[in-house]
Length: 373
Image (cartoon, rainbow, N blue to C red; front, side):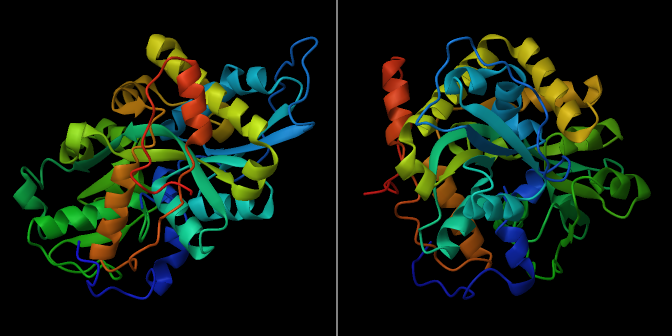
């Protein structure tokens, strides 16, 4: 992407709130849970455990969504509490990226699981002063699901109504970029053009599909699998568009203030994330059940097997933040005219993550040249 490419001065006015949200993959896309709330779960503190950095608690935010599997399982199985000792792990569940970024900025949470788009927006809007991405969490879990009676091939998408979660969110940007690569023209802000982009909240997308008001959707899990359960067909898995079939869908962020003042607590959370991911990979069926159980706590309803099983298979947990793909996603937003060339230098600080990985005999992960100096 040429650096001098004409772009809008910022995200589109109407889309700015959405984009500051979730998945460049804004997370309204990833959102599928309840309003932000305190998690009442009473995690057990081991006898003789001590507080970390003298903290009474560490406040952790995430979405009630399978693409936040590490946070779901880590909460449900007590991994975070174990590593934090007598410092209480407190949780808050979010439905949209902007509200999570706002909570991080206000100190309502210290660390959060969130998509790349809100992370990029939170960082750039604060002139690089609000947050750092300190680790990866998940890759994949995004699909184009269509009505097979109306769309039988990729070329049939032209002229149809395709839902994305939110103007400027990660899936919205991904779909606009894919459409442009097909040679189709779409006005990013209005969604009008060779394809009609219909911004629809993930929670209502299945109903919109059933009513026939949309012909398909480019959405994250578990919404994609809910559409399949309603008779939809997976026409494209976004992972096939990326090198090694990997792209960031969820990152771990921390406020710069908290990182500076409480590095031991941040390291403990990253160690818990590592241990959670290792347990998920070693115990996929148990992990799936644990994630679904926590979804029930967070959103009030567990997912049925016909939705849970295929959704879970398409998501990969990862400690690697896949930094190069975040940069590519940002350039896709620039190309769509939704973002001016962002200054992402310093958005990552993977020092503590690499310390954890080294202690476990793991390979160092890369920040794609976007690390804090």
